[in-house]
Image (cartoon, rainbow, N blue to C red):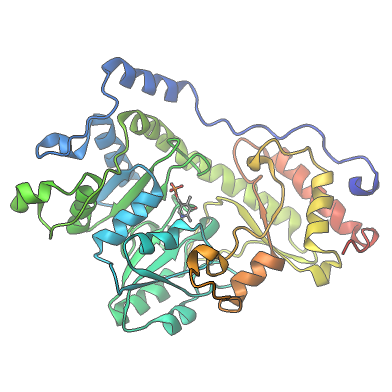
Length: 417
Ligand SMILES: *Cc1c(COP(=O)(O)O)cnc(C)c1O
């Protein structure tokens, strides 16, 4: 075999991976239809039919609810505001605690703070990267009101155990499904298996509307409260009978007609996107299984994975190479990334939230609070962004070959530390 590229040998592949292109003819035609109608947003804050939005918003929501199998879908202008909407719809406020994993995008925890409540971090399971039910149980206090369950990287969390805990302690569950659209837990798609949750539509997610989000629920009252919060809440005062629920303060979290028109087309593409990613991931599983020093994604038999990214656990001692040296050696075999979507392997995901200064205003050093997340961040986690459309099996094979080449010749990599 040729020398490793990082040691001066020829790289395995120089042709760039195909670009991720998200907007096609259909999206452009949908946008033009809205432009021709000249109504870029049809929401009114006042009572009447327009308080729920215009035709594209309504149709996007109905189509989403049907595909995901929930009674209601409520669109919002981001999933961050969707999380705030869901948490305030559940009534969390000052004095309340919400248990949340530390290894997630910050908005999963910030939403509690923005409602005046407090996020309490409970560590994750090292195999599934989602909340460890035993540690959730330990984090419960008399002030705990809700669990924020994040289906990280696209894998559903252990919903049966978490639901059991929530039922025993009378806690609400909010699902952050931003990375897990159309991921199944038993016979349902995740999102609101236990009340309320939703999805992100920002540019980097499986499908997008530039920015945007979608809340789902089967609960009439929660859906109504979310609709009120999304659109100023003032309708409550005008007709409590029609608008139900106790009063809530609302804001403006409305998605536009333009975005909804794009979202409708994107939604049609989602099942194929998930299927493609699952096929690429299965191919990587085949090619890389049995490799020393790496553990491939673990998917419990009652769940499916949406592969927002492909997570690998790395063992530097077994490999005999530091994580960063390994990443650099694989990168050297492959074309230079043009954007985040081309990154073959990256280290560690986000800094665990309990270590982020934003969540320790008193400056307290909370290292050690969530050792699993800390170790994944510092040593053990690799993420591949290449498990994405429109890569082909041959493209993903090149990535796998690059990894195998580095693993085969790892003894020659020496020590870079
Ligand atoms: C992307 C993401 C969010 C935030 O979604 P936005 O639409 O960008 O506001 C929240 N949680 C997780 C896990 C995410 O990946």
